[in-house]
Image (tube, rainbow, N blue to C red; front, top):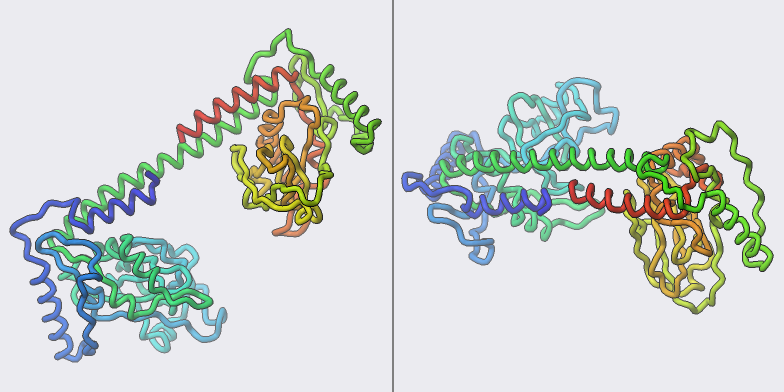
Length: 493
């Protein structure tokens, strides 16, 4: 089970009373709610609180599940003395200072009880206590995002103050924090049932938002106060363990990624597997590839290429293993080929989102008529290697060997470099691993062209890229070994 799903399941069990034991001495929640109501009336009489319009009773069909004995369903507004929202100061950016009173925005609420004040804004004290006095935040206030990102929560602690907030955040203040555990309420507001109720009743505008009425009417389960505290303690224990597992998993993923990069470097420099004396050497393979290209040119199936520049000594970063050869990728492949097929033929269309990144080899496609996609797109066919050339897709290792296309042909995003080996003289799986290597990505990133947000690898980067080519048999052994090792690392992480 994924970490997020596991947390949701633990929360659901807690709110159904399945994580803690009932204690016969616990004062029932019904009596607790009576105390809260009595305290509200006292504050109203003392004119410390305005009388609220009664909230509607909770219908049976609005109760998500049966509750344990001693628990009650309640609307959040029945526990609160205040449900309001913040105020945005006038003047736009000019209203903010480099220091002063912390001014919260939705991005400062990072979920559950957490506030992140890393990029907090500030307002002057006179604005805080003047025009924005209505939205001054107090200790133990529950904050809920109600515009843009919906339903994200935080709990205000004394060390966070003084604070104010804008109108995208709702402030929920309890009648008496001694009569309800605010951390329990935070957990309740993060359950699936509450999140779904928010999603179903969201007011759809240009920026989705929740109304204060919906916040007040939110239905949550209330156990006896002593059990609320037991639930909070149990959740802190279990969710803490889950966070520990998540951190360990993230570390494993980071270690696995680092291991993959190191293993690839060893493979591409001839240090992962021993060389075999019986392998046909790479120079012989290069001669076969050159002869096949000449044959295709003579048969007018391939345009004669402009000769690639000779490889200089400074482009050879290490001593070659026996039987290997230095070569440019463009000498092995036809770069950015064109398909010549019937307009009515069904083909595969692959926009960038359908090409997967990382160290995997995976893509999908949408069926289209060839006439719909033959112009203005990159052409490819089954067996071609495709490499994304635009940032950040290039750095994210969006590359794959194309397969399973309708009628074997397709087209897609223009942000691709396509490599085609018409006679299968090269192990494409080995070359794909090379195109995902740290060295290939790092050197390509150094040669980006274009403006920020539209940067790409240089036009001839892939074709001119210098590789150490093993014999074909060794390419296949390396590809098989890398596949096995990467699969093991994927299971580990």
